[in-house]
Length: 544
Image (cartoon, rainbow, N blue to C red; front, side, top):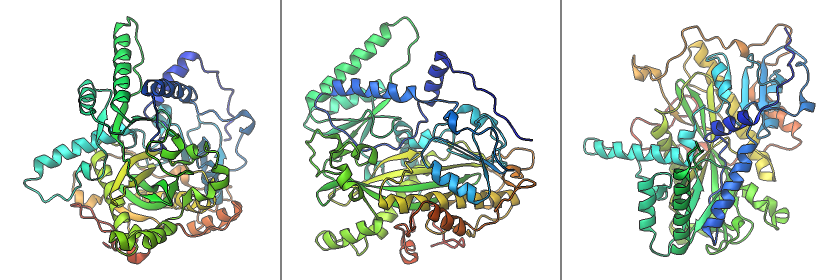
């Protein structure tokens, strides 16, 4: 029976305030690396103002523009729902090529796939485990917020120190890949940081949950640190003197700024890679190469220009040279590999194809270690999946640093390279999610994987190895995936091969789809991790 959406009620001010508090820890986290400021107090005020504007736009109902909402879908299911613009076009093309119908009412509960930028508690409450697919693990902030990730890594390191005497652990120490960090929302840590900052050092202050570089600034000298300290102390005293309930300011961290990064043609850069959590019951994880993000202008640590320190496209668009240099701000991984081979290999003593061997192995090791630190905290239900953007920086000594892990990473195609890379990431992610989901419903082994192409299997939690003790619980009723099955009268192309879907999607996007910069099979074999009980696999389930 067709469902006709009714007129929605206008949200009141109190409803908006409640939703803003609810979304504080779950907004998309595609954040940049740093910004700069000559006056930390002024920047802190600006940051708070920006955060208020950002939060005011958050809407738990995820309302679509009225003119885009048809009364009913034109055909039978399966149905899919999309909210927001990030990746919406690509996800829509993918689903439509499978014969699925798009619905526009967020209250409908008969969807096969739901893809939303902003998480809503009601969505997870009505989610039917084993029947539907839902993008974004509800509490992914334990991995993708700055404080969440910091806490998980610290906890992991404390545990490893206790057992290190009796085990041969190959986990990295935090200092080997994560910049020194302090939480400003905890008094003891805040005081420890202010006590430490007595010399001319550069630190970066970041909100725990933000996006596109909002609210980030640099602390370049003791005077700036002292100003920030006075500002925070004043705010704390003001809140303590209030006799009415108040909303605490957004939590922040400060990190030691990597002020001597490796440069490409004089410009700062970082590398965006992807971690796909295709399934949470059991955990099945994949790694994919992404692209290199460069600034428009040459790097200068002393510069007050925000676009010199932040590499994300949102920030680079603010540079006056962006329109001229747009396609030069993003490199393919092959281009990056060739550049390193030509410019750095001999002088720095690097192996041939360092990018696709040593660097790639390090990224995978760091990403997997971060996941292992948070896996016991993540919510687990069959149908949850997540795509996380991981940003890495390489310093002048070729040491690899993890800057952050981002929920709902930017999936826009603003330049030539992104038009090739992003669609492949989205389409193959959905291919893998569907294949793993369907195999779990049928009780089949996850491996081998027919749709594995550019991604690399990073982690597979084999239920057989866990014995009778399973860390997840499926609901008592049988899981049938009924909302993913073609409905009577549907002209579904449900059986269409994923490769054909990508081919058709590329035609609709109006451009050729070249291969993403990814590992050759030979190079994949050199990316075996040394973390205990963790192994990389090929598409047939054989260890690499």
